[in-house]
Image (tube, rainbow over all chains, first blue to last red; front, side, top):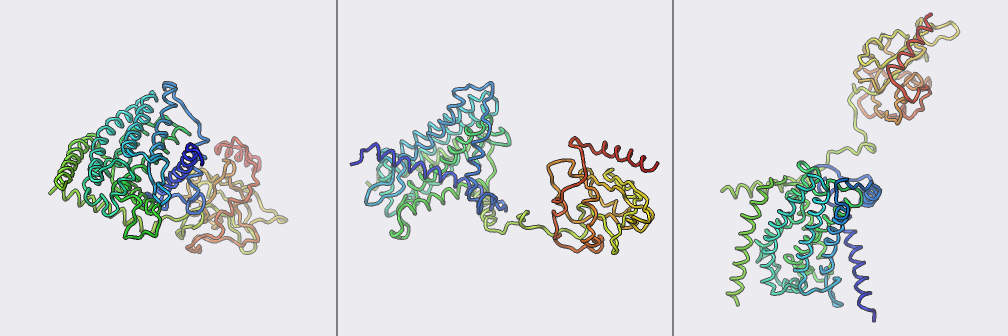
Length: 326
Length: 197
């Protein structure tokens, strides 16, 4: 029998490889989709249809000069990108991608998987705020202050919108939640929760139209203004991994994970999972291509005065119905 | 009501971007596909010849006088019975255009009494050295075997077949690396004075 740690290391390596490849092509897909929505052809110079663009970008990133401002806090400045990236990658340890007779397709099957994910993604904000603070320059600081406020306000509504699903499923295990959706996806009874999750997830991942943390027009580059080269690349990776993460969670919580559609059980679950997650990612890119950035005070007002009460109401109604049905 | 109109606006916005997603992109994949130029497009210059192979330019310097950017330097010389370059008395011993100074206005073309200097539709002249933008007779004059060159009025609307061919030619004019246009013009004028007397 192979020792457990070997299995875990192998599984982690495979998942990391797949996740990083997905990141590379999610980035290309974003650039392509964004371009097509703006009537441009998008990257098409490197390889056929620009398929080697991620490799070219990575090479460029690696060879760029790595600058540290004189006023920066050297240790924290160097640590922050890794913090962002490790928390973004760590999440994939508990995400189940599919299930076959051999077992669950995940590195670890944690029975409180969703809590683990929220704990880790909440830690991710430290990467951003420390980066902004340690840069020793004003725009990054403003970006990090914004990120802290934005994350706190939207995390509340996000968690509340997810609790409705947890009540319906009666479990915090991600596999259990998917199993509970074998007949009906939670997007139907939890449509309000899904809407709130979708919106707050955009804010959580700092993507347009909620990308005030790195608002180019106001804050140069926000928290990563001073970063260059590989360290900037790490933030970049973390940002896209976060997008993939929220797409995966949306798939698991609301779209039945790897459960097949229309009873097409012949198609393997992983294909369904990838299709659903890809669709969510497409919606996020579509959102970025369509909506302009919100004003900061409106962002806060929207989070606290609309999303939070709505999420609370959704949670109470769900709880009441579940209690009433027994 | 405001809520519903806001939702309507959102839906409309998402529909618009979704439509664009499938629309044909107007971008021309430039190095691969070349855009049709207008019939009167002003590009790189060309010095034309007569059908018998003689140069049209008579070295009158009217183009250099007309040039608003002082980009043209002409030094004329007398034709001799042994060496007749042009049908007139004089010909251009040196004819240099600094394409970096040139504003492609076409006034030289209008000033020329013999229709010798014309603007072609060629436009790909990029290079790494400033000196390479001094186009002298070696690159401006239509090669004898290539015919007489096309007058602007006869030029067809379309994609020039030899785009970039001229810029690919190696310049034989010797230009110092720290080249400055005005400075070079001064040198040429000194040279002209030498020729004149």
